[in-house]
Length: 72
Image: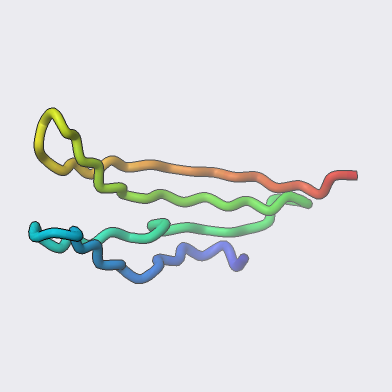
């Protein structure tokens, strides 16, 4: 919760049968900080996506921002 950007280690993904190994960031870079009394978690991830019709793997970028406040 230091407000600095952190990046988790890369994780290998290996298909169950043949194929190739690729790597993805589990959770991608993220930042956790306080905004007044709220805890803010912001980050992004690159998710491998396989389309059965295209027969290829694309990487989609997803972003998130969660704001957590204590309920009274």
